[in-house]
Image (cartoon, rainbow, N blue to C red; front, side, top):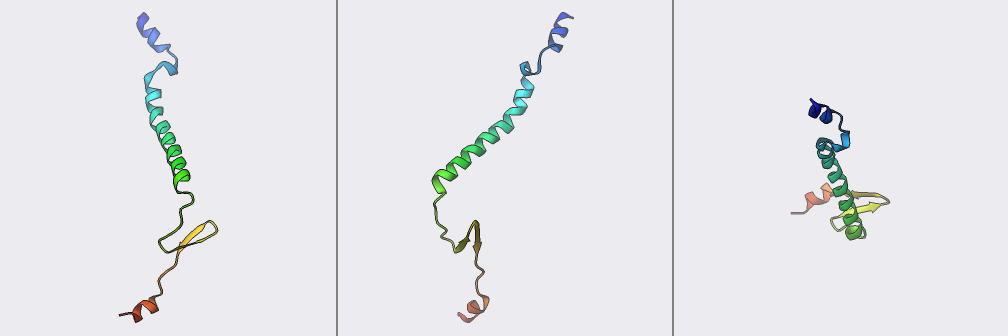
Length: 73
């Protein structure tokens, strides 16, 4: 009986399950911060080379001219 009372009166931070359940989201947050840091450090000044046009913060791709494409054999 004394062992049952001791188990029931433990505070939540001494139980393993809250820490196990919090580990997944905590690892996702850390991974997201690492990904953002790597992206900003390595690719922030990279130009657009696939036909896109940057207008302010918006990057758009121009649609090909269908009439010009029909004329070419």
